[in-house]
Image 1 (cartoon, rainbow, N blue to C red):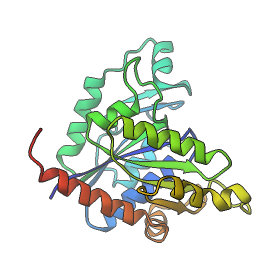
Image 2: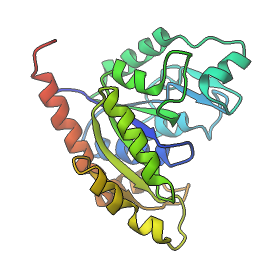
Image 3: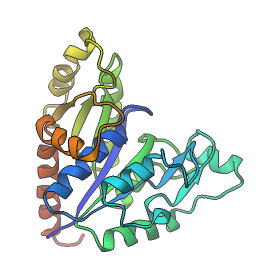
Image 4: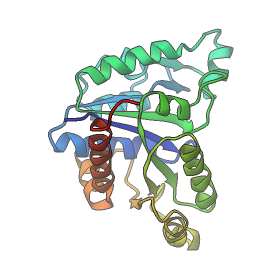
Length: 245
């Protein structure tokens, strides 16, 4: 069986990437897959921070992988990785990220890599999450906060992925609060789906931060995330059968 390789990116920071990632991980584990999760660089946290995204991803995946691989680089200041590393007098080595990814992938049926911020956030002066996704042959799921501005931000992100030759499995419009939706929130999905007819667009409901992994996995099924995972499995199977180029 070909390994599923997923990259979860966002249209911005704070759009719900970790919540959606946990839901995807839970759905794959419910199907019996061994899942490894990775947050290559996380800023604004310490490695031991129990509230970090990396810790949440690791727990959702079963907590069996070493945190030094789940999150190879943690930086204190809440900035783009390149700037946070520069201010901390640290260098980010993409080769070391490669090594962590390979260790995680070695024992997994699926690997999910969550970015930080948006797709083009600089990890180094020459590397972004787009280049990491391409480097690791990840298929992308784009998470967008369902609010005014989501259309433009989503189209920009999907366009960058296409230009970077990264497959786009779908867009997840995430509700970031439980308030009554305004007109933009009620029409964003139709607008984006019309403008991206070949890219599935699904809605993910607002859930409290305390929502457990099991409930998130159930939400993955009702929100259509399982359909995106089915596409991922199919695409990886096709790619596995293609000759090396």
